[in-house]
Amino acid sequence: QVQLVESGGGLAQPGGSLRLSCAASGSILSINVMGWYRQVPGKQRELVAGITSGGSTNYADFVKGRFTISRDNAKNTVYLQMNGLKPEDTAVYYCNARGRPVGPWQPDFNSWGQGTQVTVSS
Image 1 (cartoon, rainbow, N blue to C red):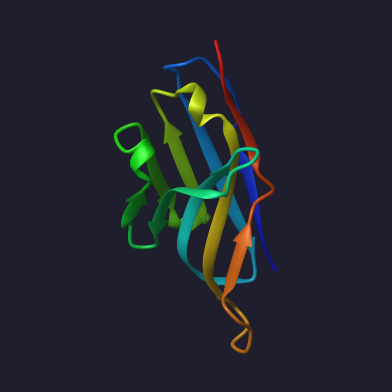
Image 2: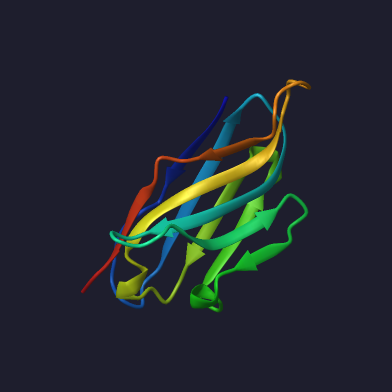
């Protein structure tokens, strides 16, 4: 029903930068929250950053001051600007979106992207 397409992952040097993008499409009435999560082998998926349709943000402690989340509501797109990358930022990053579908009798959606690999290595 709601599809998320991610881009921007790849390889970066320690201290370098990457910008992730995630565009939502489908039968969407509104997207209340979009965010980024990450997961490494053997660990739980964890929140990196989230943003509401009104622009309120929430960051994990380990990225505060380094990462910035933003959105373009008109394009149903969320971005994650990652600066000062560290090797421990290496993970698969997943986009998430929650909101209302067009169908009035359908439940709220909670959709995930396919994940994009971010690798930080010298």
